[in-house]
Image 1 (cartoon, rainbow, N blue to C red):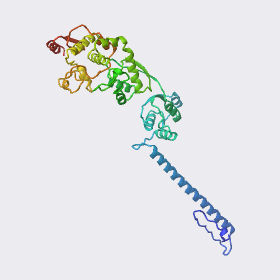
Image 2 (cartoon, rainbow, N blue to C red; image 1 turned 180 degrees about the horizontal axis):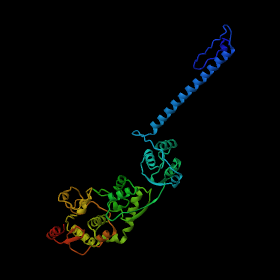
Image 3 (tube, helix red, strand yellow; image 1 turned 60 degrees about the horizontal axis):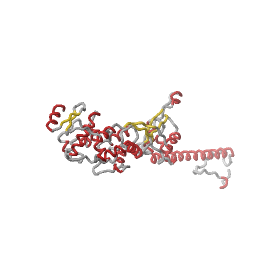
Image 4 (tube, helix red, strand yellow; image 1 turned 135 degrees about the horizontal axis):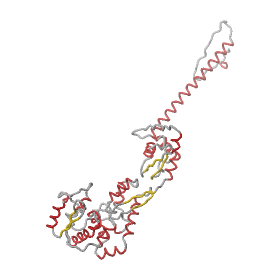
Length: 390
């Protein structure tokens, strides 16, 4: 083998040539030289493969760690267990799953819920795809029906276009805004806090204008009825539907009658809400209405427990003397006249009772344990009834 620079072979990692000396001194062994060159070439190739393999592994690990840091929740990383399908029958049955996606949920929260219900196989993969495709702010709230083990593309297709279904619900007579918010929340139609926030100032009609010390402008004007709505209807639309129903039900004749009695629509509904919350049986409505109207005429406090109950988080069977000392404009034991506004949403029967009260002169009433009212003309008679029935 020649010793000139052109004839020398070096590996890129400076691997030295392995010299196998010839047994014949002073002579070159072409066979040995060829073996020497072959071995060095082999070592050179192995070294490059080893270095490339290590570098590739390092780059892969760094990439995975980076993706986790970008897309995983800062508090916890959920590892989604793979869904085990035991046979083809289970796989083709397509078990249905109902999931409500509420307004304001993040992509991470949506992905976790879908994975928890078995709709997708990996929360992390779903979130990565949503981020890469720019879907984070495009997933629509609503009530959805999914199949177990759907593809991510199919799930995205639903969430991007939205899915509607019809929901039927009933608002009973006497429900307040808080009770309505609870019912809508249980039906996945509205968030409670959001509903109360909107209802506080919701007044699409002049007679609904919010008064001083009133908690909810919508109180009293969300007509009790059975409604069928789309699952994605927003809070303003729900309130508009119920308030519009009330406005339609309040006929021109009823408005004229209220005006003849010296009552505004607001006063009419405030009085009707008191009757609604005080009365359990239909025959008592016009009599209780007459008691309230006569007390107002005589400038007597209405002294209705219903207004005290309205101030309480949890209603009581009986209010106490201490309860009658609550400092509030709604305390009709401490203040004469009507409370600041309605305390519930009355039905048509209670509204009609105010417009057509009984022809009596009672000033007092007390309900027995079954809810039937007993009436008195004087306070002494009233105390006797209280001792007898309570």
